[in-house]
Length: 411
Length: 149
Image 1 (spheres, each protein chain N blue to C red):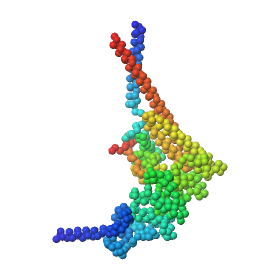
Image 2 (cartoon, chains in turn yellow, cyan):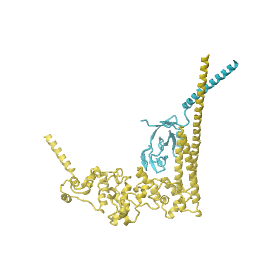
Image 3 (spheres, rainbow over the protein chains, first blue to last red):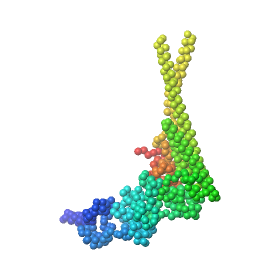
Image 4 (cartoon, rainbow over the protein chains, first blue to last red):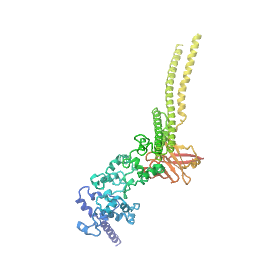
């Protein structure tokens, strides 16, 4: 009798569990769709991986066989139109209690942020059916989080995700904004780091513009945006005389010298008084400021350090090539590298008294390398000459021994 | 006869001199090989730091850098008085990191990369942690060594 009860309970549990996991949506939709359609993609989707099924988003009873019956079943929501998508997703994603059961660490403010973005404002206020909603960036049934390499929001895929719309001239025509951001970004120092070298620490679009609250950084907040990574440069700039001057003239902070999407690796030619210098774009010799003399002094200081670094490296390379032990000098060269990085960073103070000491420190270290390397190269030649002398001595000794042996033999 | 004698003596003397020079050419390189060079070894597993805990304590940033073979190490004195050592080269783009006692972190000023005091990357671009070293204080001297496999 007990055995019968256990078997009955087991069968009951199996049948409940079995019915619960029935998903007839897939069996029909896979048949109806072409290969690579939404239904077949869903296995990759993070919602599928978290155990959610079609009905969790689209509603309806997935155990029913007939599509018409499913449409008529309780809670069927079907496919939302473009304007309905944000609220469709937010039904779960803005519900802290629901999200806590699936991914407690995931924020639940995406919809609130989206409403502050240009995208959200156009969608909700202007009922714009072209502007990006959730699925425009996250895809429809291949949604992944930012850590999944195939995800459209993975840092290395994100620029292309934004570019889907923002690089399409026809699509963007009515918004009257440039469409060359992706092209410029791809050739920028950030784009090359992220897209070519795979440096996931390099910023993608969302790192500067935000993601759900996407908007262009304001003129005055630009230093804060760039300062997320370039903290020291931003701090030095904000203390510099340029900070107030830029604000007064409505110059975007970092962007004025470095541009925005097509930021290239900075060069020392950007400073100074030559034609290539950016300083001369605002400053003139008779503008009553110390701008150009300072720029000139900073450039001279930097050039001296760069030259000293180059000479030190050449001397050291020669010593290395000759097989000398150069551990200390190689170590010192790394310190000169650091001095060069720091001196270039200190440019953002636009203060000669900050740059010059750092440059001098680097030059002194470079000089030490040059002197030490010269000593090592001398040592190399001393050893070479020593080898020649030793060879001569050995040859001479061998000859003398030969003569001595012959003398003994003659006796 | 005396000519022969003096010639023989001269030749013997030259042979002796040659022998001494010969020995010298063997002994000198051997001596140079045995005496440790001024430069440290390229690959080391342990170093004795050329400063004491009180010198680190006296440092404004409560930290000092030191040579560890061809690389740079950083030793920091934590708020709890513990000495922690790690590689001083940022894992992002090779800048030298520094201790920020005001924030309780290791900081790379190049791209605002941050590590905790165990060298674990906690924010910013660094893709991996800083290599951790073992610190031993013996009779006032600080020894830093790499973890053995």
